[in-house]
Image 1 (cartoon, rainbow over the protein chains, first blue to last red):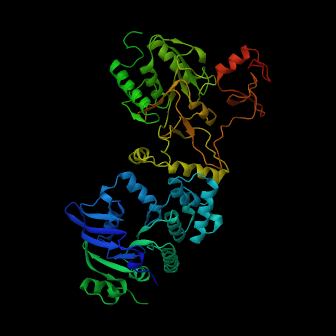
Image 2 (spheres, rainbow over the protein chains, first blue to last red):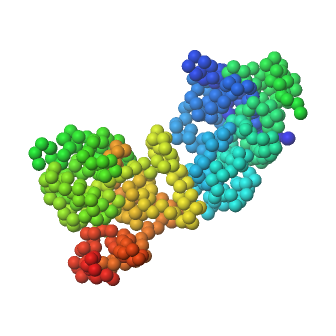
Image 3 (cartoon, rainbow over the protein chains, first blue to last red):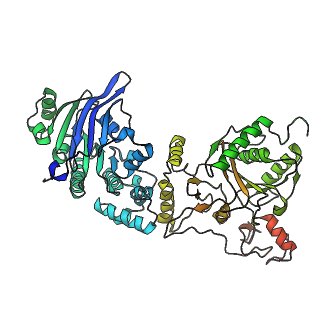
Length: 261
Length: 287
């Protein structure tokens, strides 16, 4: 996969995270995490359950309050933004794909309504235009046009996840957070979904922070990798470099634990 | 009636409610929390409207109470009698003569004046409630004017029924700011909310909210550019007074499918019959 490097896209990172820390009482959620995300770049965060990767994602995406550290989006500290600004960002330039589609979809609202919600939230008021855009997006995520008025609970798990992606990308965001987007899907469905995500990331020049415990997913999608353990980043680098030549003992265990077929 | 202060509620309570009303009028469409009292009637029977009425009544007022447009239904009769006994105010069924009208689910057909107050009984004051169950979240949505979700509901209506099927409690936007539930009035009445000369007050007893529309407030019913808002009514003339521009109730007249359409606003219908406008069935509802 050929992707323009940071130098071709500009000189400032899209997202800068510095010293991010979040405690749960006396326990550490994540501690002193720093990274930069450049335009068009996909950053993978891997680690086992409880390593703090979802906490980190939640803090960066603004779902959780961080105890310390700074998050700069396009040079602006998100902590100094007003709440309306933050929420507007969250439904225009940012997107969040949840592991469980139930968390990211309105299960009682039709597929078309789910995709159209972000459009209506930013002021679209023409039913025909909203519906056409929704139909277009359903086609892009390979959901048959005839299912536009069906509710997500009538969809399979893979379709629900594709619908969630369509719902998030309809406003053409710059920055997408993904939390285990392929979790709980069988391998063939997973492969098609990864293909789809990869195509969309390339076509829309998305910047992505993707959290997963599945090393195959980051091997396919991510340019760079952070490895987390006990709330801290223990290793960082280019994906292939980290996976092929892991330096830390924990990363070595993680990489060697992948089942070979 | 002895043993009660004027209009049942004690003076401190009425003052508290008046404060909420004044705040509501200052911020049109905003739901003001208030310490709703236990009233001698069950929730859902107009406890919010009754408290607002009690706080607004003066001994000189003339009160009219309607339920679905009618002066003679249980809810209307009992609330009217309640204030006759506890406030000793004069009552009337004539819209034009009343200074304060408490209503459940209708706006009178006859245009109101600046000398009148219209008090609505509201079951669910939050227009976003069925879309977003968390009160903390709906308050934030109001604060930040995040109202896209309401259009999702209208979108669903059109996708499923081909038109906006919401027929009552049709959501409105007040002065380009707050989204408001107009109480379960038919959407036929929605245009009357806007630029109305009377003060319109909304009381929700169980939900402990008061909101208001001051006179001559802009109220816009939500819609899509290609599916504009349409007030609807049954395509009939009133069987008793022949009116073609009033909101109609469908009344079954026998067990063989017989039916007739009559004005839901009983005062309006009576006035027209007195003025010599017979309907298809003549002016006597019993024939």
